[in-house]
Length: 112
Image (cartoon, rainbow, N blue to C red; front, side):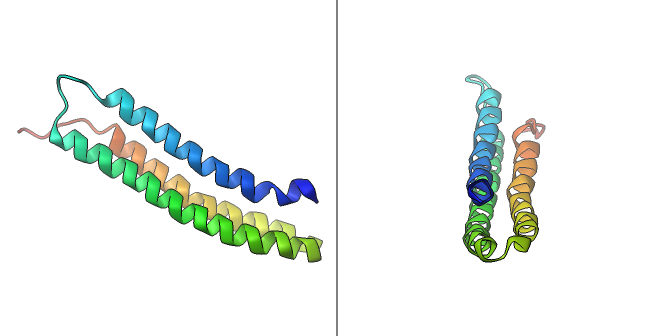
């Protein structure tokens, strides 16, 4: 029962790792000599995409985790449904990470 109840906490921690991944990608693409406004705005958008989708996923995981753990304590059959809902909530953060990675590796191809 204790291990089943800790699954929402573990999944919420994975959302923070998404932010760490995008921050590493952004910081490695910053160069001192050749950093345009286009790249700055693109990196800001990538960070916002991951951050806001992580916020939405974290709220979903929190609500589902609270209700799911309480329901699982009363009825053992609801564990699979709780995990399924948690996986779909985690997908929100994963979609934001994918969009953020696409934006973070975008090169400055605009002629300015």
